Image (cartoon, rainbow, N blue to C red):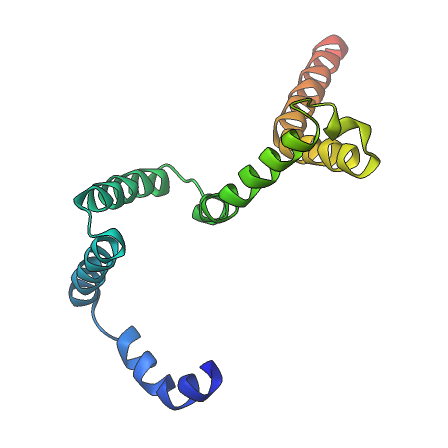
Amino acid sequence: MLLVLNLPLVGLFINILRTPKNLLMPIILVLCIVGAYAVNNSVTDLWIMMIAGVVGYFLEKLGFSTAPLILAVVIGPMLEDALQQSLLLSHGSLTIFINQPIACSLLVLTSIVTMYPLLSKLIRMFFRKRVQSNNAAER
């Protein structure tokens, strides 16, 4: 269905992209406000949207990538449900994550990937100090 709708409307979508930002951004803001309010008819949702927008703006200015944040928002609830189910099956014991080989290997892999930036920075600093001390000793 998307293919049938998108092929004839490609020209319209291109024209929307040609709209100047000073016109397009207020339209997007109004649509976001209407959409956030329409979900639950709640002003609280509007405040949450505004706060999330301000936090996102500052995170963007500080150089944080938005893709992992969006991924966390989308996948986070599913991961929470899976964690809760696992803990219910194991009667609250966290050993279920290290007793099963697949879970343990995924836990180790996740730990390595998470710690890689810090470890690589520490290793680089260690080798720089070592090279500097060797150069000082040679002089």
